[in-house]
View 1: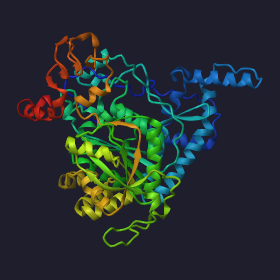
View 2: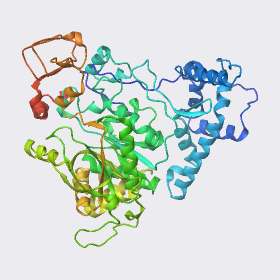
View 3: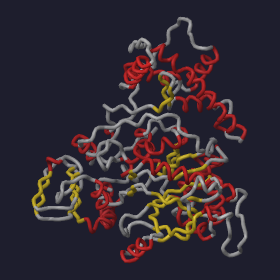
View 4: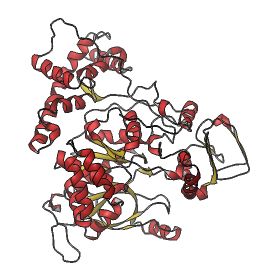
Amino acid sequence: MKRANPPPHLPFLRQASPIAFPPSTPTLSPTPSPLPAPLISIADEMTQNESALGLGNLLKPLDANASNGHAEARSEQQQQLAQAQGQAPASSAQDPLSLILAGMGDLQKEIARLHVRMDDMERNGSPAASPAMRPHALARAISTRSFRGGESRSRPSSPDKTSSGNAPAHVNALARSSNALSQPAPLLATPPDLGLWCVVPAGGAGTRLWPLSRESYPKFLLDLVGRGRTLLQSTWDRLLPLAGADRMIIVTGTAHVGGVSDQLPELLPDNVLAEPSPKESMAAIGLAAAVLARRDPDAVLGSFAADHIISGRDAFESAVKEAVVVANAGYLVTIGIAPSYPSTGFGYIKLGELLAQKTRFVDPQTSEGPYTAEGSSKLDPAKAPNARRVTEFKEKPDARTASAYLSTGDYRWNGGMFVVKAKILLELLSSSMPALHAGLMEIANAWETSSRMEVLGRVWPTLDKIAIDHAIAEPAAKAGRVAVVPATFGWDDVGDFSSLADLLPAEKGEARVLGDQKLVITENQAGGIIVPASGRTIACLGVDDVVVVDCEDALLITTRARAQDVKKIVARTKKNFPALC
């Protein structure tokens, strides 16, 4: 796989590490195995067909020395439970075979569950579930889980190793200076079966965050807030409890496939959809929907950007679960963010009546319905008490209009999050943009065949470049087919250095610093953001709300008020110094 080749300018932002496995697969003893014969057969088949991801990697994390403290913590819990029940504490030293046997029950259940899903896929004609491909698919899916003492968990990242070796120089520099510890991916139980597939469009150069974000190493691959996880990894962590690793799809550019795979080692190879060139969100999400509809015709698709920051995880999960309920009733659902100030940088959603008051889809012009075979009769008001109809989408307003929106209480920020059945999305796209729909379906039909690259190379350049809002959301809203779940969690798209400054900690009246605080000297300076990514000392005197981003090969100086205009500088820089962009 071709890895990203980022520019040599960024040593600063901490990135969380990929999973660190032992260097070699353990050699199984030739002595008679205590494992059940059917399981040995399945394991042998997986190992033969997928040696890099088969049973060998499944067994590696079972080594007590490689469990990063989780086995010790579990042993302590078991001893406490035994003492509470009046039993003798079990020995904390467990040999690998005991750990393997303790997890075999869950392993067998997992294999059975995967076989059931593969049976469904095979009945629907998916080539990925054919008898020849089944061992590969099972091995890939099982390799994303660890089985310790009867529990199935997502594997954690190693907390003591970073993956910044291929990063630009300023990424590595901030990594060395960051006070944040590299955080492992969370340990998770099996997620609830919502029928949800999470699609993460990971694209865009993030030009308003130049020179930190570059075309070759965009902002979603960076940790911009010092939490030890990049924006992409944080998005993965947030969605994993809702879908599970095997239902996570990343759509990214071919140049970023290597970087995405490095940062998300649990991501299944078949769930990375590579775009030959940027085409905006409709083509990316539409491609995922078209491919997904072939794998799982009843799938509910949730689209969540790779580079947003969200706080309030419980509120986020609650909103997504309610959106899934509404999507199953046939709506295109968006999640509306409660505005905290009159922003001119976001689009807005105007709220309509509660869906609990509606009985079916109604065409406002013909007063006829329902629109689809699904109908809204499936909508249980008790499970979607907050969902409303979307009256209309509003473009980014001026300051006066934004203030008027907030005063009414009837508007929400458009965070670009959509939840919808894959087949409903394709139906809406076919109605509003039939040529784009036809092109995506042609690509999807060839996706799991040997002609994928030929079809992709021929059809992709002909597709329209348009956002999902304009392509289907706005037309569908006029027809009464779009719903919104108002949400209360914190949200920011980290669109420029002014919004980034608000996310960083600072003493009262002091500038925010992303990187080594010791390299920044200020006097009578407040409100700005300084990024000492080159290792040079930066001194600021009497300049409020300044933005200073110092990389080894580029220096940006502006103000927070002009943060949205950084893209203009990038456009001019690209003409004379394209390698810097």
